[in-house]
Image (cartoon, rainbow over all chains, first blue to last red; front, top):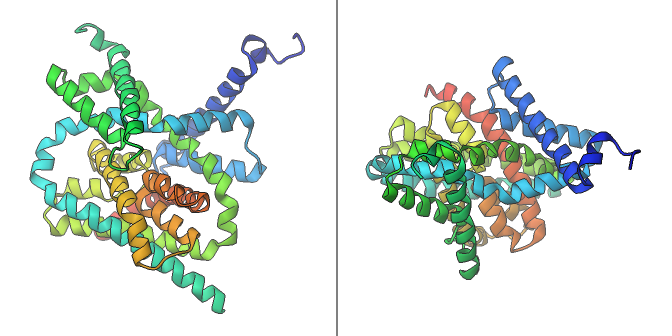
Length: 132
Length: 232
């Protein structure tokens, strides 16, 4: 027992590795926020944090266990995190009343266009690569 | 309850409770794509908060901790991205071309259709990032002058539309390849599209997840540049 690192002495291993995971995530987010604010990178802090972590993981070619379990848990619970902002729809009833037509057309039309363009471009490049 | 609203207790309690109850409802609906738990929870809580007369900012402050967790959850998207990155290496050029054209067309067609049918500047800007995953879209909307809460609702609706229409549309276009179907779903309808195409095959689902992560990144990079170029 005494040979264990200090934090693991107080918490059983699964909880301990979860703390390691959340620390890595928060550190990447904080780095992203600092880059966005002080280096004026025009990207949201969490997105920069995600890019940073993806590059780090690709470089070390493995995913630390605590990070994997914490991230899977957070990602599974993610739908819950959208809800507080989404309830803000309450304050937007006027927007929806006046702009339901452009919103509806843009959502259906643009989703169909994006899907069609992506699929056809990728199909064309795959075909071009095969014939080359 | 009146005094408790200055603490996180009631906000956290009713939000988590509503979500758990609605997950049960969704399970009973056999996971029908229109029975989206986020959309249903938002409607249920909006009704509850509206009826009890709690001002929205009071509810939001109380539930803010859940909102904060969107940040670390967005960073956590790096893990599935890193897992699927080897797939990118094998099909680098086709995927990159699809992603670039798909993201550009998603942004431009949303702005363009919105404006043609009479949306104002703020609504159009809230529509622009609608195809990328919610936390990234909300962060982008905040940055470019849209309304993050409007974007949240638009993104979720886009996901439901893509999940319902996507597989049918792709079959109409005679796209049979799992990689292409997955990438097209991930670009146009993020996590909800990914969950839908995952039911077809786990391979298509993996490509869709990859496309979702990279699209979030690409749109976050493109959108401010594109808006500056368009003079918006």
